[in-house]
Length: 84
Image (cartoon, rainbow, N blue to C red):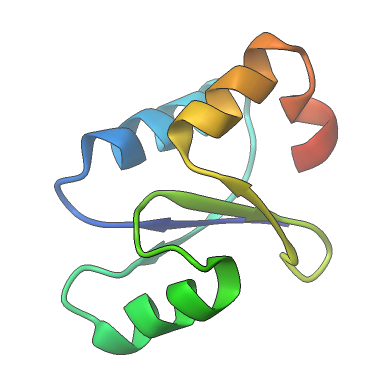
């Protein structure tokens, strides 16, 4: 399972979703725009308030980071094995 925390006008969120879409990765999007409780949830889960934040695992327990992190993993050929 892949979950991505996003905000409406975030260009890196758009890039992260485009990369996952390009790789045919199914994900659940959690839009934290104007939702303080979701911002708090993200902060507790990852320790960060920036978006996007991408989580993977059976219970979405592993945080892969943001767009630049998954882009690097993809360039190294490691992203697909983590998200499938």
